Amino acid sequence: MKTILSIDCGTQSLRAILFSKKGEMLSRIQIEYEPYFSLNPGWAEQDPEVYWSSLVTACQKLKQASPLYFDAIEGVGVTTQRASMVNVDKEGLPLRPAILWMDQRKSQMVWGKKGVIRAALKLTGLQKKIKDIQTQGKCNWIMQHQPDIWEKTWKYLQISGFLNFRLTNEFSDSIASQIGHLPFDYKKQIWATPYQLSKKLFPVERDKLPDLIPPGELLGRISPEAFLQTGIKKDTRVFACGSDKGCETLGAGVVTSEMASLSFGTTATVQTLSDTYVEPIKYMPSYPASVPGKFNPEVEIFRGFWMITWFKKQFAHKEVEQAKKIGIAAEEVLDRCLERTSPGAMGLMVQPYWGPGLDHPEAKGAMIGFGDVHTKDHIYRAVIEGLGFALFEGLNILEKKTGKQIKKATVSGGASQSDEICRITADVFNLPMVKGQTHETSGLGAAILVAKGLGWFVSLENAVENMVSEKKIFEPNLNNVGLYQELYSTVYTKMYTALKPLYSRISKITGY
Image (tube, rainbow, N blue to C red):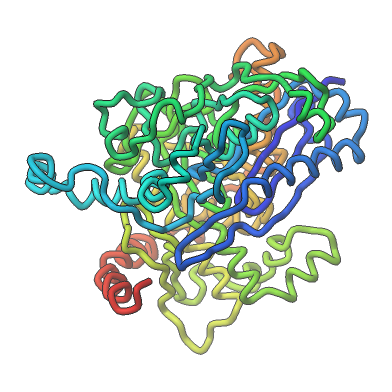
């Protein structure tokens, strides 16, 4: 048997997964770690060595657990969290902690501060939007506050680029991984030229950026150093893959524009595939897809199903311990909270903006409708329903922008292990929800790209056809659909507009 090794590095854990040519998950090791540390309010950083040491440990354990499958590895693919950046020196050693996607620090403006450009931006009403976009740039903050670090920086890499270098000694990364505040031309899927807006907003020198490789093509080979640490055979081929969300969409089998992929991960997303470039939200680009040359229009809910982690830490210690004893995911135990409550959570509504987005930078989370009937179970249901409403809102945006009607959706990510969450989402969307054979969909998407790169299949579509299989389909319950549609249209869609002035006032008063 020949196998594929997928490395999936997320915000809260890293998984090393072995897949067969049929897409079967043969063996899996997960290494968990704290998502981030925060030296100041709103900051989110992590030592990049945590990711590498987790990869090494996962590979060593995987080899111990499944030596025959491990020794049969023909190709390796890396998929990681997005918009989390690492500054490294010439040897690939980190110069500072990685600044993660959820970090909320702000830099000073670097472009459009004065003169004719400032006047033009003000006249067109774009000044605030352009300011918000560039002040989120992690590169800009480092240049302004740690110029010595920036001066020493040899390469400025995504987590994927960092791990790919450690595996191959090549400063190369996938085109489909370049998502974040970077001088990247999303339409042409190349590094931006000096005259393009993204280069002016994020002025990273070209020689500090990695070489870009199309997804599914050879990126490098396992180096002697990586072999000694991980046990992966020297010269094993490593292929360019893509971001965790892009690989998830591919691994869910989304290869047409009539399907959508719902990711129930730390960041909740709704994403589809498009032949053409569109901006789902103004100035929010379509990301490069793991399908070469195509695009993934997407709407994100930052810290989306991270809210389940928040709920578990704050309210569900008993359920988490119970899940550990039984040996199942905590989400499965928490299903009982959903089974004990009815659709609508007795009027409790959640707006799941636990982190600001580009289209709602002032946003904070909100729960409304409390009464003395509400219990911990209702809070959990309201959180899940609120995330469903937010994703449904995103689906409506994508349909309008692409001009395509979504007829079926797939569900993946950690929370998709819960059948009850999948059922609620089917009811909110009034669409069939397809759950694949494995919930490790990002890893499967990476494996599909590696399989195509190895020449095992004639096309990516052929690889998907052979490696992706459906496990369950959740049809909407028409008894619940009407209630959810009314709550969505008459309550949920009004919440942000009503609360936005209060969010701004809270920030001014408290500084957070």
